[in-house]
Image (cartoon, rainbow, N blue to C red; front, side, top):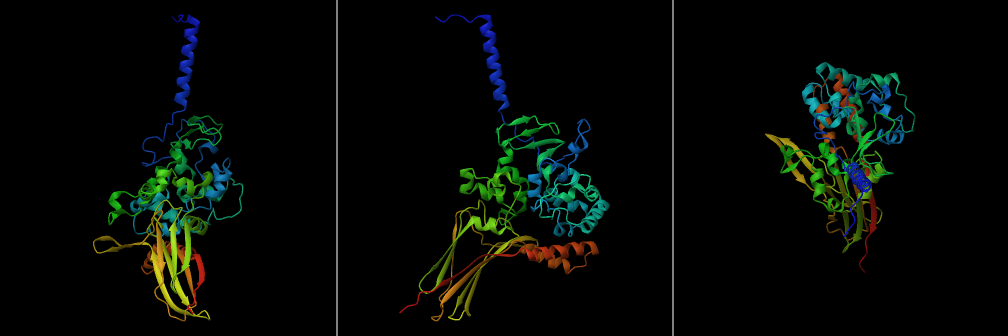
Length: 414
């Protein structure tokens, strides 16, 4: 029979149990606050007795301590989400329509337009101000810079505060060193709350998974999260962040980046019975290639004679093409490559004197927008809107690139 515990032993045991419960509670991931992406606000309440720098929501303020993240982010498309091609469409549409777009391009409540005058002034200022984040060199950014202080927060697009600040409180992933979740005491802005939600694909869904009511032919206009869930990447736990934020770098690279795209695909070119076949396999892309309706990928094959002249040409397009027709949007075709899929591009029977075949794959990241910009420029735009759209059209033209090119020599029959 066990000897009863003494009073001292009982107290120590109780303390030990309580301490264990406290440690267990500290290890519970609180997750993101409810409604994190519903009309998000980052404004710091007056009750927070912080310095002006700690209250500052501009990315330049964050750069004072998080320079590495800032210097990567400033070159990303997130930093340029408040773009000429976006704002050039707003004049004449009204600020309510524009705010519907800003829900993803500048999502914070503090970034939205308050009235038509605010919108017009902001669009004009966007035209006048030089691109603040275009510099390639890493630099220390002065938060007292006058030009930067004059810019509305919306001009920073999808900036630090969009993902990390709600009502002045900071949120982020668990520290790499400890993996701890919950409230983390740090010297600045009252610490932050760490949650693994930042490492989940669902975190990106607010902007990259459109609702069902925006479906065309049964598929939302952007269906990236569902495409990922239906892939083996979801089963393996390979989230959006693994590819688009490697080692937590704030790169957000995608279809505009040739290295990123080439990493996700494998190519195999083979000779077949005096013809040639190109196989493209989606090996490391966790969603459809491409996932959105804006890009187009062109695969071309050219049969060449002994002196390199083109004898035969064939072309295929990888795209989800949509268009507004009559009573609404229609899907004209969907030829995209799904995760793990291999697509064959076989050149038809060739002339007997063909000696080689050249395959090329070209990516047009802004194909849909090019058509939109040309259409807008044919209309009567305001001077400011026209200037923005012309700039956007020029940028879009410069984004095209050659992804793959290879020539295969044909085996000659004897």
